[in-house]
Length: 112
Image (cartoon, rainbow, N blue to C red):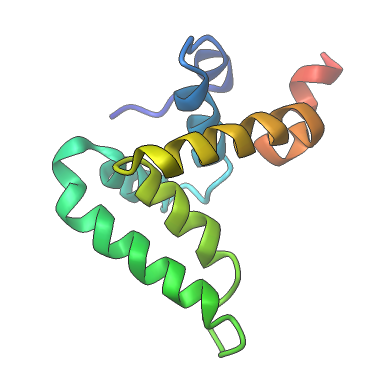
């Protein structure tokens, strides 16, 4: 998959897809291809265990290396396959887009 620019991402009509792509754009460049691969339908066999492991790691955030950052990442991965989590993720990302647009990298768009 080719790298999308911010303007191409903002033109995506599906709100869920647009918000997820904005989050992916905030990741380090080396991590983006792996996350995009994990979101493909054929990667379900890897996405579900990875999501569960990330959520478990988020709960063990008191240990070194593991952190609370793992919990939302695991939920976002699982939301690709679990309808209930997808609705929850959509609502949370809509809130973030309204209240904290800088988390999605939208502060530069608003200023323009």
